[in-house]
Length: 183
Ligand code: MG
Image (cartoon, rainbow, N blue to C red; front, side, top):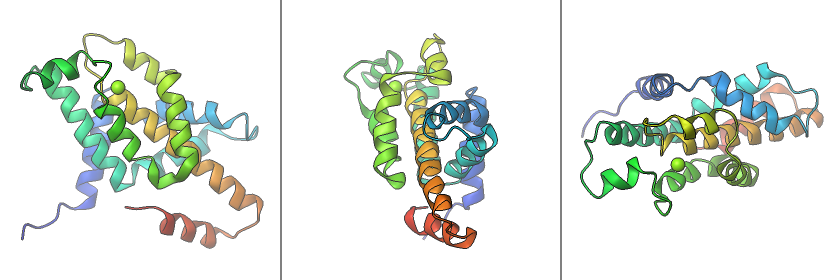
């Protein structure tokens, strides 16, 4: 059997891919901040950055980022075979695999993440909107991945907020987080 790829290698690769494609943790955290502000007026950018970072440490998310960004980059270099090349590079309206991959990675954070992802998919805000406009770059998968990471980070904060309100201690909160999520 082949040896498994070390987790830190996968995590670094996924984070590097986002950076390479012009998306920072701060860009995503800004979306998280705007999502959470109405529900939690005392939310800080620091908390949103931390939450985004925590989401990026999850294997499911890293795998989705690696697959999606790779396809964007191959399409940009015109290295996919037809008709996939045209479907991805033109972000064809009925091609929903980009959303499907991103949606697949919001299930770990529950229904709030799923509905928030749906919202962000329609209301392209912040960096998602910028990605949408930067032609001729291909960001067919990346915009959905960013929406998915932001939705997860916002849902994570919503659940954590409730746990803190209910005075669960730090160890209990950490234990819940570790148990509830895959990867
Ligand atoms: Mg897309």
